Image (cartoon, rainbow, N blue to C red; front, side):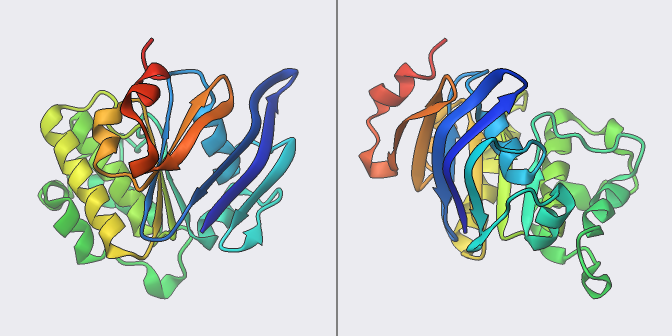
Length: 231
C-alpha cells in the first residue's frame, strides 16, 4: 500500500532524512522506532504531504504521490494521527469526529457504529468539548477521527506518548483489531519497543535520519533494537 524509496528530506540546508526506504502493507503493522530527533516525524511529514522530499519516491496504492497536497492524499486514503493529538478543544467530541468527513463524498458522511465499538468511551462523551477530555481520551478521539475517513493507510505518530497505562492497553487492542481486520495498512511510530513488539509485523529503526535496522518481527534481535532506543 505504501512504498517509500531512497527519500531525502531537507529543512533549508539541514538534511533530516538520508536515503530512507520503508513499506507498509495491507493487514500489517509496520513500526518505525527510534529516539527523539532522529527523523521519524520528518518521514511521516513526507508521507502525508506536509513537507516535500528533495529526492526519492513515495508511492501509495501503486501511484506516485509526487507533490500531491495533503488534502488530496487524505482523499486517496491516507489518515494521519499526529504527535500531540491536535484535536479541536472547543468543539464537542461529535463535532471533532465530523471533521473527519472532509475527504469523504457526501453519501459516506456518517459516523459508523464500529467507531464506538472500538472506543466505547466516546459514545458517552459526544456532547463534551474535546478540551475537557483527559489526554488518553483525546488520543482515542484523534484515532477515531482518523478512522472516520475510512483510510487505506493509518499513520500513527507516538500514540502512547503521555498516556496512562490502561488506555495504552486499549490503544494497543484497537491497533491489533484494525490490523486483523485486513483492510488497511498501519504505520506506527514509537519509542517504546515493549508496546510495538506484539503489534508489528515488520520493523524499521532510525538513527540520525537513516534506517539502520529493518526486517520482519521474527528477524529483529531485541538487544540490537534497544541499542538505538536508549538515550
